[in-house]
Image 1 (cartoon, rainbow, N blue to C red):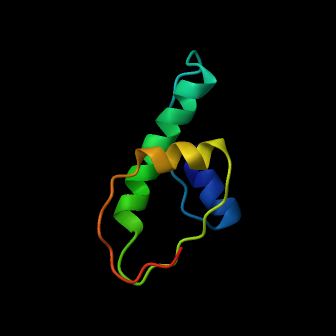
Image 2 (cartoon, rainbow, N blue to C red; image 1 turned 60 degrees about the vertical axis):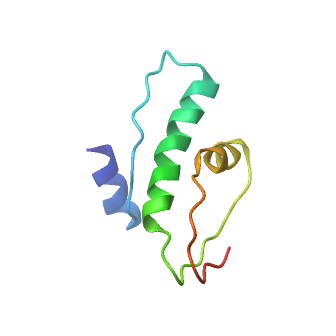
Length: 75
């Protein structure tokens, strides 16, 4: 329900990573990073342009990405 509400209000595709509140900040960040990395691996196709921010979550996502050859991708 939350993802649909966010999509409706902001007009974006939303993916919610379900994590338990009892987890430490580090484990919650790692869980979110795994979901984000899998989504990026699906979305990045030849000719894609990818914008990258910085921070601990982006760093955690980068460690979860699996190397794969994709032609003509601009970062």
